[in-house]
Image (cartoon, rainbow, N blue to C red):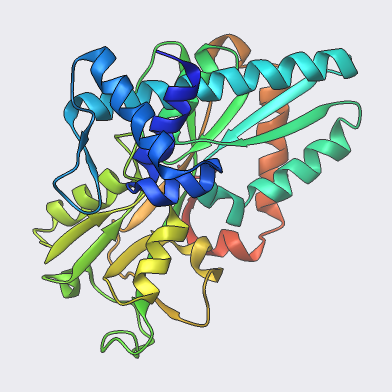
Amino acid sequence: MELRQLRYFVAVARERNFSRAAEILHIAQPPLSRQIQQLEEELGVDLLDRSKRPLSLTEAGRFLYEQAAKTLVNLEHIREQTRRIGRSQRERFIIGCVGSTLYGGIPDLVRRMRIQWPELDIEIREMMSTEQVTALKEGRIDVGFGRVRFNDREVERLTLREERLVVAFPKGHVKSFEKEPIALAELQGEPLIVYPSVPRPSFADEILNLLGELSVTPGSVEEVREIQAALGMVAAGVGLCIIPAASQRQRPDDVCYRMIGDEKATSPIIMSFRRSDADGKINQIKQLIREMYADNPPWLQLSNVRLGEG
C-alpha cells in the first residue's frame, strides 16, 4: 500500500466521482482507476460500490477512508512541523476549530491572543470536533473549539455558550417568507441536508437527534461533507439545512434563513484542552473570552448561554 494510492483513494472517496477526483489530483482518469483497483486487489476487498451514482463506500472503504485521511493529515503536519522548526524557534500555539466557529468568536479571540502574546506563533487548523480530541492527546493542537459533547479522561471541556440554530431555505420556498422564528415541527416531511458526513459522531448527529427527540421525521436525509456543500444544495432546491446562527452570512443571494424558536434548538461551542494544561495559557484564554463576551459583539447576541452563566 503506497501513500500515493491512499491519497488517490481519499480524493475519490471525498468526491464520490472518478472524473472530479482526477481533476483535483491533476491526473488522467484511467491511471487513477487502475491505482484504486490495484489497492483493492492488494487488500482483497471492494472499497467502492460502483453500482451507484454517485459512488458510495463499502464498510471497508469507509474504514480505510477515515484512517487514510488521518494518516495524510499527520504526514502533512510532520512536513509542516519540520519546515517550521528549520525556519524558526518561536513558541507555537495551535488552535483546532470546526469551521462554523470561524463565523463567531474565534477570529476575535485570536486577535486578542496575538496582542496578549506578540512573541507567540499562533496557528489555526480546521478540524472536526472528534478529530480535536485525538489531536489534543497526540499534542498536535493546544486547544480545540468544537460542537460535539464527548467524555475523555485526558481532555477537559468547557461549554462557552449555546448558539441558536437557523433553518436555511432555498429562495422562494413557501416557508421562507415569514420573519418570525419557525418551529422544528414545521419541518416534518421536508427533505433535509446534514453535514458533516464524516467523521461521526458530528454536528449532523446532533441535528438528527434533536429532530428525533421532537418526533420530527424528515422526508429524506442527504449527507454532505461540509456546510458550503450543504448550502449549495439548499440553493439548488435539493432540501433544507439547519446551521448555527452565526453562519447565516453565507450565500445571501440564493438562500433564506429563519431562526428556530424551539428552546432546545441550540448548538454548543465547547472549548477542549488537555487536563495537564488546565493552568497557564488556558486560564488566560478563558479570561480573554470573558473580556470578549463583556464587549457583547453582534455574533454573541445569537447565543442563549454564555461563559460563566451556566
